[in-house]
Length: 95
Image (cartoon, one colour):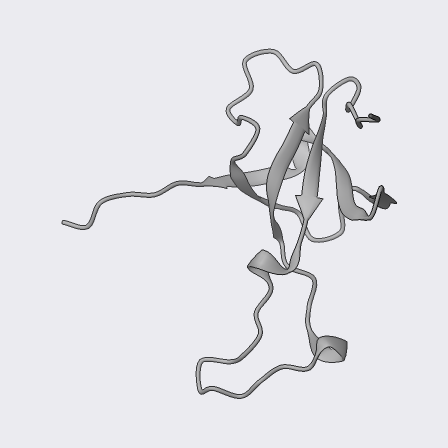
């Protein structure tokens, strides 16, 4: 079995339609050709980073024009520098 492992201070994100908007707030369905690339993805692997604030499986937001997209064994991935991650999505309790 082959596996992608990011080198240096890079992070491998798995891209999917899980975070893509499919319809607007008013209920209009957005066709695939008009969809914007989502800026959220799930962390698949982490390179050599000292004290990373993320872990494999976390959902993160990243800069719009960052990283290198590639397909590997039928899945889409994005290699991105750790510094281009903007936020980690965390669940909180309502007050």
